[in-house]
Length: 191
Image (tube, rainbow, N blue to C red):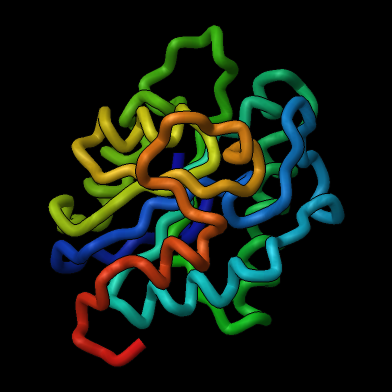
């Protein structure tokens, strides 16, 4: 489900950084839900990471499961308010997000959009084509890596959020900024 923006402008297929939200861009603890905008706290390095990814030629698309809606912890309007706060906070720090997609369903609903199912990626790519060979998915959980695999994307684990407990993952980075620094510059700019 598209959370933001209200309208998508079609364009050429471009490399896209599909990024998990909670635990990747903002602080998150296992077993807790961000249910109010005031609870959203962005990692200090996240704005710099998004700025660098954009400078390197990636479109930034946030992909997030928000089962707190299905569980009754927040409404769809509440979820939208949290995403809008994320956008405002990132913009204040000079970072841009091109779109946010979220799944409001619970784990038992077996929907096509809940990570690790590829539905949110498919919806995003339908709205704005992505150069899938040069795109990737990054997140702090196993479901993010499985989403990458299920979508035919490279997957990267960040060791923030729940990523700290990852074992045996070969493409893991300290945080989103470390990943952004390691990725190639697709525009040929000096980083």
